[in-house]
Length: 214
Length: 247
Image (tube, rainbow over all chains, first blue to last red; front, side, top):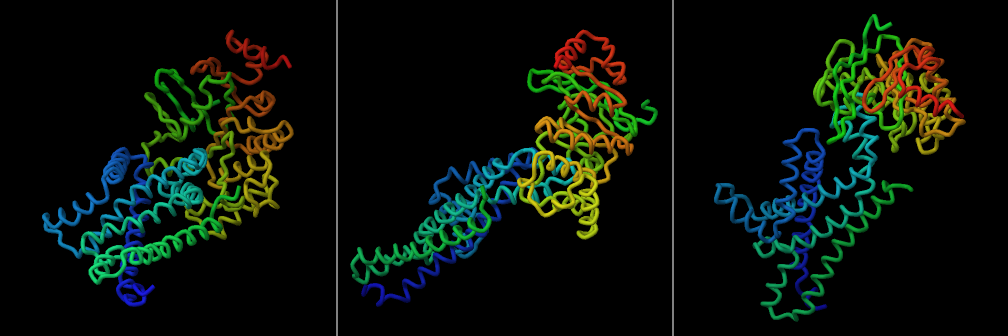
């Protein structure tokens, strides 16, 4: 207990760091995932190829490797940004591949006739997707997207290895101060639980509200 | 007939892999004409219907609507599709929207009508198909026949030049078939240009100007209903009719 009360500020900073990384990266992942899912079902072949390559590259690269590529690679091309931003980029792009696939599986649950009916009425591809297909797809993808965002929250721990302030990274300082490693980690785990359970609860509410009523 | 062609297909070919589903199909549908397409399963009649608004692409040949060749995928195609109403075998009402919203959606999105203006038009059309009291229900709360009538109203809301019906009664109970056919009969009497793929021979006899008989991806006969049903020329049509008219 003492480790928490003595170092509340340090824990708090780490906790907020993880929350920030999670929120920003989630927003980026959702936006990019949505865009890539649209690409993957687009009538234009080159869009489909782009979406497919995006998913293949990002989903199949270890996240740590991706962090190295972004944090060490991009500055070589003259793109120098704060490490926090790089971390959000890496996490967001990585997770967007999973969001894209979850959305796409949702799109596939919507009967083909729905899109055909919309198109036969003269609606464009984006109108069809936006007003007919995705609202129905959305209902069935709430649970898998929730899981993906929870995974993102936990994956943000990798950013700590790249000197971004986040929850897991606090153990280094606390360990140097001589606190029990077990209790240090217990409180870190509690911090992650607070974040992930909040995400679970949020998605539970979304599912209650919007989920498919069968 | 066919003095003023609205739909013209010439030399249309389509393949599903090896399968040659439409073979050199030529067909002209005149303005105000009701053309009923019949034929055995797998003869390509549904595919033919779906090529007319490019829900199915074709490998060769040309299709034009009102003198305008069907454009490639894109905005021009969407604009043209708005002029071609389509009614599907499986209704395909938007499952997450109310009946009224189903009929109004494309009016606002495609025709740019204001919401209250679109809703007013939708209610008129729902009244025309006898469903004005169902406007606030979801499609799943309606019977098949009611859903199909909503689908017809939805297509009519775009003020199309032509209506395509792809087996509109094949998924319905016998009781419900009539309520849909009555709406279609009324449309035909009002002078709507219609292409109807169906197994309802009664409708073909009473409402059609022409009957097109398809088999194995080809148009085998293109006749008046009277001529086709009383004196089919081809063996294929004779065989088909003998099977379905036996009961």
